[in-house]
Image (tube, rainbow, N blue to C red; front, side, top):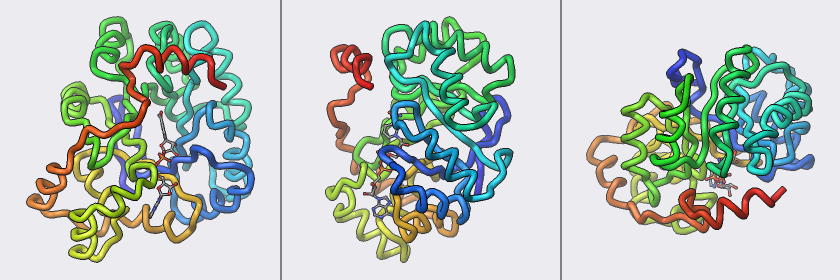
Length: 277
Ligand code: NAD
């Protein structure tokens, strides 16, 4: 597995395992993934599966020091409750440190959360701190107040939502871009896209592998989710081929700026998130 080196010199595997919606019946898949090379797990308090992750890690026998665990503070805890939420995540994950701790959405109070996270980072309880779903204007607020620069921004990114402008901003500020939904959350439109299918045939890979490799060649980390061993395996096997520049350019023409209701600049949506558990 290859790593990206974050702006504080911490190494993060380029491919991780997204675990949104994974439940106890998926524990075998988690153990399988850990035993077949996954070292980076992307969970969140909101996924209500941090205890399951701890259990799968225990069963896999993989050592804590060999893992990179990301979790996130949920919107109802942004602001004053961040410290308490962090302690809860530590307890559920059965660990005494988190590799990467993120603010899940830019809801009101995120500057206060950021200050708490800076303290936890300085105390050595978190190896890297970052944000998710932050637009440039929201990141700039943090950049003005911070003593520690965000290490990452985890944002929805795939060939139909390429995030060019925000990606450039992240590169310029050495903030690692992590893609969520890098497979369009299983969208049949992306999986049936004519160009992506043509490239899958050309490179002898699957459409999923083309999408993941495209992200990695742009310097973006990916955290695809699957509970099926064959797909878990496929999603790791993206380091043995290279998409040619001309084909990368062809993929860039697929941009549709296509996202669901979850627009981080939609104030009503952000307000609503604070009431969801
Ligand atoms: P994804 O784009 O990773 O798509 C996952 C779906 O793609 C699977 O459910 C399956 O249907 C399909 N799939 C996976 N591998 C495949 C393969 N090889 N071949 C064919 N189909 C395949 O979507 P996601 O799960 O929403 O995102 C990944 C992870 O990102 C999540 O699990 C979570 O950890 C994280 N995430 C973060 C946020 C955030 O707000 N920060 C939001 C959503 C997801």
